[in-house]
Image (cartoon, rainbow, N blue to C red; front, side):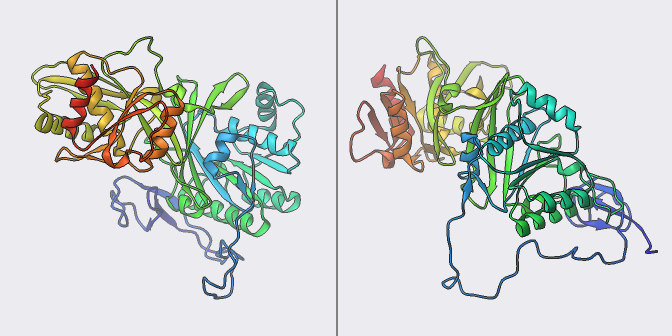
Length: 455
């Protein structure tokens, strides 16, 4: 019998150590080593086989490149994030907080695919088949023919995939699956890495598209080794506040489509429904313009979305606060310094609070100009004109830099009825956009001067 020995695996990088250490010797992460039992020293057949099929050496010019066929999931917002649909043999990893709706969304997608004539399989490791059937009835999926397998042993799951040959299979979740080739517990670094590798290999060899559901840590990152994200073709994050009915699904990695694409869903009694016009949920419906509110157009992947930026400037104490929700707090401090130095607007003794409405997170610097105008509006106590929007990056020298794909942003704003826009000069269109008056500026001072002329 092969000998077994104890190893300590790192939760962050997957590296191992023969003894416990306070800090991982590979990635220097503290308190990340956990005890595992090393697998048998006897070599396992095909264990280290390639994840993809091996091909002959060829030049790029000789390789025939063709578009991959996509299978729509029946959920338009999910298809948008995936790049058009599920790809044959593709592996998708989706993570999110408990109760956010991952299983609900995937069960709805499988039912739609099954009704479209595709063979599907739902492998559940956290629930019984009866619990899955009960959820399906709550979602109104009566009479669904989706096949369900309650199993956590990898070898049995692979045998079922080989026998059934489904077009799409969901593994819920990868942290519950274990292989008999390893002696460590399910969810350990070694088990997650090994099971994901075998499932990926099965997807590439058999042409079955596999969706892996992943747990997340309390910091919001996918649990398990980071190599898990490198193995799969697509990584999706399901985001949202459990106290809100809206959910966002974002593509962090996609070998078959654009990254940072976003899909918006609303949680209803009958499950998740796609939101075709997400700008409506990120704009507050004020009867009249209010101080401290400025609308901007942000880009999430290929989709322009209008988001309301709200700012509140109030008298502060000896240590004024700077707080932002949905925006970078460090960038807020920089914008306040630029506003003071180049526009003469001082907030040194004021508390400044900035919020992106609807729970959306904006990471692009094109929000700079809208943030500064919202702060100025709140400080002056005067609202911006009705139908007003702004976007553009602001530099430390006070210059207003262009945002990518400015034409698409302006066309989206005009389509939704906005009439006045302050944009970087480089984003000003050569042809006028019907119904939209555009003020092109090069510096922050010019943007504030435009506001004074519009009062």
